[in-house]
Structure formats: structure tokens, C-alpha cells
Length: 135
Image 1: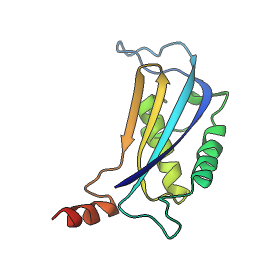
Image 2 (image 1 turned 180 degrees about the vertical axis):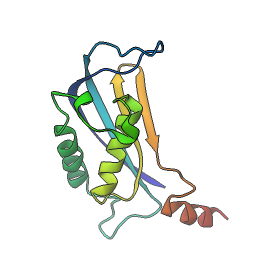
Image 3 (image 1 turned 135 degrees about the horizontal axis):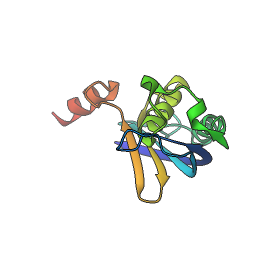
């Protein structure tokens, strides 16, 4: 399996529910987003995807959040903007942009605090190809 990765950063503030149920005060983070694409085969030009196109799309998506209040956006499931929710949101935006080989998004909220959203491998179109090759 071939895997490629691009990453970008953005700065934004948010607040989420504390374990007590209260909403914490708004605070900022320097968020880092990594997107990984996977493919069992390379395309005609010997790539999984073009790094430049992938990087530009990721940066354009992140630019919409840069220096913003993440609580002002609508998030999947009407959740507050946790790192997990933001990872899923980036995943969905990249798929909508045509990067079907996306396998995982990693969002770092702060050093040591990282969330991932991964494609369900049992439903991924490449899963059957990968299983078939190993049978």
C-alpha cells in the first residue's frame, strides 16, 4: 500500500464541554492537520495523488478556519468543535474535493493532544482490492 501525507496549520479559538458539563472559556490553539491518502497502486504518472494539488486543497480548506472562532461554524452532529469533530470535518471536505483515496486525517490541537478520523476500512473501496491481493 502506498501512502502519502500533506499537512498544514491554522490558528483558531474554540471552547468545548468540560467533564462537568460546563463549557470551558474560549481559548486559541495552533492547530496542525495532516491528511493521508492510500492506494494499492500508483496512477499513470507514478503517484497516489499530486502533492501540489493535495496541499493547495488542504490549505484552502484550513484558510476558512484561520484566525476564526470555531464555535461560530456548524459541525457534524451539531457537536462543539473538538479535535475529533474537526478531523471528521476535514476528512469530509477532502472527499468532497475529489480525493477519494483519503485514508486518515490527524488533527493536533496542542502538543501531545491528537485526534484521528479514519475511513472505515471495511467500507473503503480499496478494502476489497487489498483483501483480494492478500488472499
